[in-house]
Image (cartoon, rainbow, N blue to C red; front, side, top):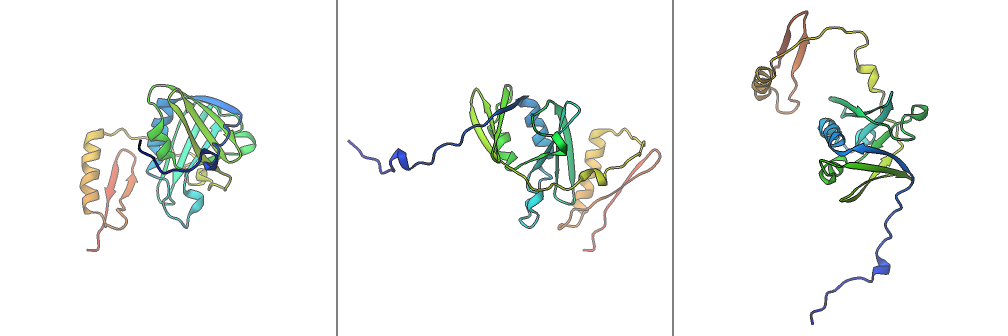
Length: 193
C-alpha cells in the first residue's frame, strides 16, 4: 500500500480549551453586525489597537464598533456576553472576517472565553478568535451629542449620486465631503488631477 509522509499525532499542538460559557447569540444577527463594521477595521500595522472590532455591552445590547481612524462603523444587536461591559471593559476581536465566513447563517452560537481567546461553537463546529486587551479609542468623543437633525433619502438615488462622486474623487483618499442642512444633504469632492 501507499504510505503518506507525516508527523506523529503527539507532535501536533493540543487544541485550546474553550473556557467558561459567556452567552449564546443568534448567528444570523452576529454575522449581520460583523459584516456591517468589517469594512472599517484598520489594516494598518502601525495602528495595532484599531485592528479588530470593539465589542461592548450596553443595556442588554451588544455594540460592535470598528474604525481605521478615518471611518467609523457602529451597529448593535440584542444580547449580552458575561464579562463584556463590566467595569467599562470591552473586548477587541481580531479576524472577524474568518468568523463571519465560518458561522452558519441560521443557528445559535455559544460563546466561550478564556485567556485572550473567544470560542464560537455551533452545531457545525468551533472557531477561535484572539481577543486583545489593548485600549480601543473612545469613539463616543466623535459622535454628535445633541444633533437632532434627521433627513430621509431615496436610497437608490443617493447611492447613484454617491457612486458618481466616488468616480471623481481622488484615488488615494476617495474623500467626499457631506454637509447636512436643515432639509438637504450636500455632497462634494475635489480632485487636483
